[in-house]
Length: 374
Image (cartoon, rainbow, N blue to C red; front, side, top):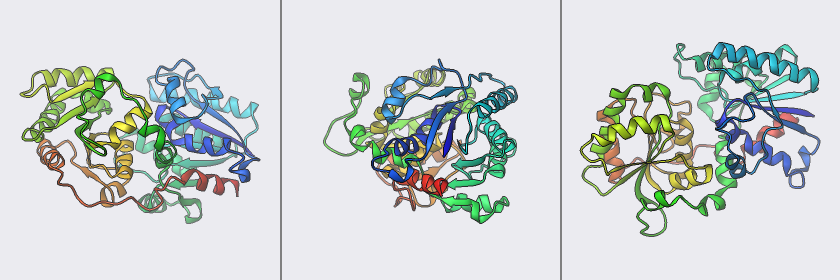
């Protein structure tokens, strides 16, 4: 079997890494020895977000193919990816294509795959915000509608896919593939060496969790609304006010600039510590040992549930409701009062009982490949 695994952005590589590792471990996984694959990136080869440390941390190679599509305009990007991926398929006979998540480039790849009559498999299928004004929601509807095989992380995603008209025989609940990385990299994560600046912020009082909260911020809309972000950052500071707690915020430059300005003008500027982004293993160590996490990232919330670390999500919905119903996640939207209250509960160790959702066991990649291979 000739398999194409397509990624459109940095987070996609984290989700396909477990599949690549299984395919590369032919001695342990002889049943997949007949599968030949290529890892394809729709973007450019010198993309600054694809640092070598990412691939080293995930224990996979860099992409075999770079399509070279690069545009800030989503419609133009979609067209570029479609044209370049069509050329790839014409030159490279392919039996099946794996796509991930809900990017414009993912949708473009899906459309071309089906126009060529090739089997299409979608990892992280059945996720919805139910907000049709979001470009990603349109992408999700198109990708799931075209896919021959839909791999979901949980029962709720199965239900959404089925309600969308997908046949039951196409939908497989395989679990959350992010957990495969945490399981595989457990020892490497525990041995990760943090930068000196970050290490100095952590009170080393023994094994286990430490009195700090990790704060992450990625959503462009939230970063761009300084007044709203100010109310949320101040709510975090207010929630930590009566306890000894440090907030560590590994932020990329755009977010760091705005948050730093807000923190400087707050009542307790020393509480909030902005640091440079960490590599995958370092960040995984930091979040696994935190007293809690405040984030706008679904992936971070999912990993927090696996690690059983309290988590607050700055959103009113989640693609994986298991993190809320079963796991450690609490949704506060963009409400500063709810955020302050939840942060205070987190700081005092007062959190709901939680568990790990079904099939979030680190074996998802094997299930996916068994189904495709059959």
